[in-house]
Amino acid sequence: MAVLFLSTPERGAVFRDLFARDLPDMPFHVGQAPDPEAVRYIVAWTAPEGLARDYPNLRLIFSTGAGVDQFDLPALPPRVGVVRMLEPGIARQMREYAVMATLAMHRDLPAYLDSQRREAWTPRANTPAAERRVGVMGLGNLGQTVLAGLRPFGFDLAGWSRSPRGVEGVTCLTDLDAFLARTDILLCLLPLTAETEGMLNADLFDRLPMGARLVHLGRGRQLDHGALRAALDTGRIAQAMLDVTDPEPLPPGHWLWRDPRVIVTPHIASQTVAREGALHVLAGIQADLRGDSPAGLVDRARGY
Ligand code: NAP
Ligand code: GLV
Image 1 (cartoon, rainbow, N blue to C red):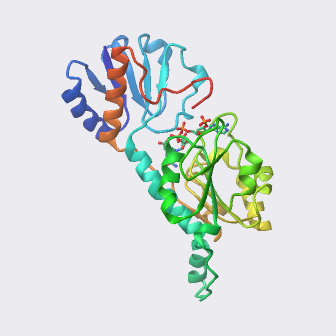
Image 2 (image 1 turned 90 degrees about the vertical axis):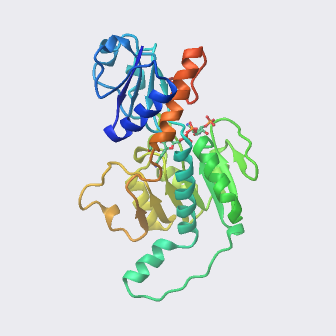
């Protein structure tokens, strides 16, 4: 029984030390396993080529990130469970980023950055936070953490998810129309699935109030970038902050590099913390060895 680690050597060193401390009898290989048949667990961002053939005894593949859309889930053998990264550093960083981005949208930061570049001293009237309706798509681990981070600012908070949820201080909705109609600042924290791909499109933007703002934190392929540009041009969306785009990185000359209404960051809202990630994987393997489900086990049919 062994673990194969397929990420950077720096992260591998952190994982190796913690495995030696907490699971000393479990061989831990970085990059390559001398006996692939012994591999029960893989830690990786994407599935290695020939996974079904080369690792006949694989039980679990642990994603090094919170998302699992980078795996071709239907192509994995049914015996292999997929586990998303649930280390607390990802949620901490996402809360920081989402608070920063929501405040940037609330206080018109893109417009002020543009004014500064144009040497224009142009104050705008501030809107009280209580009058700003913030809506988070996705009420999972990250959506709920972000909403908790936003609560102290006094925004009028709502969240939207597939199944009904209850989050303190948040109007939780499953009706997308009702959710969009009351959302001035929209944050997307949905996983990328067949259902959410392309979901941030013209039809959805049209259901937002005029002058809404968008913070996109999920995956680039959820956003129709052309529809965003058109919505910015009509004023349906006043400004946006995108941490994820399609493609990544943006190609030279792409309109998003220069549009003053949009702030783009290079998919850095959250980065997995190696030590906390190792502890999550260790706990998952220990659960599996006891016959329990690891935390973060993905529903492969649902895609998240
Ligand atoms: P999660 O715990 O699995 O939560 C997903 C939420 O989305 C759930 O509330 C789920 O609804 C909802 N949802 C999924 N599909 C839906 C649909 N079709 N309609 C309505 N609601 C739907 O996921 P998470 O850990 O919060 O992470 C969310 C995503 O954030 C990740 O998949 C990843 O793509 C992204 N992410 C981005 C970064 C970054 O740096 N930008 C970092 C980490 C993660 P139910 O509650 O009904 O199941
Ligand atoms: C980053 O985007 C992640 O999925 O952890």
